[in-house]
Amino acid sequence: TGLTVEAVAGAAWRNLEAYPAPVRPVVVDRGQVRLAEAFSGLWAVVEGDGHDGARLLTAEQRRRLMAQVGEGPLRVNLGWREFALVCREADAAECQALARLGHAPDGIPGLFRLTADGLSRV
View 1 (cartoon, rainbow, N blue to C red):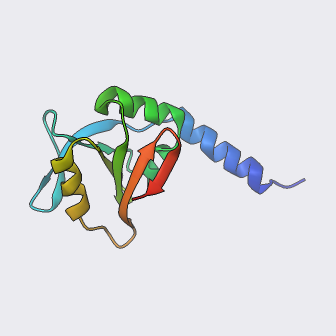
View 2: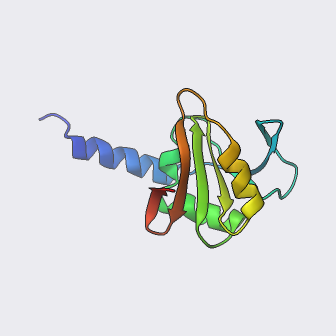
């Protein structure tokens, strides 16, 4: 018998769950995202394999995010394949920086909201 869509999707989600990405502080400097030395109010989920947006939906990645970023809804920018950017909704200035960023041709434009219920467009 061949593989089913469900079997392949299940294996993909298990793999993402087993390999969460690092969460690193970043800054936006002249329109470019750069790693920060310390707390900045913006973080990147950055494995660099194009799956960081999907990782945001896994329980382990959300645990890592909450440990670094804190509780509460997050704003998410998926404008680049190499990383996903997040800020706490409560941090208005940082979230405005996310909103002003553009996106790469292969990225997903717009902002998203990440809660315990999942990811939705803002």
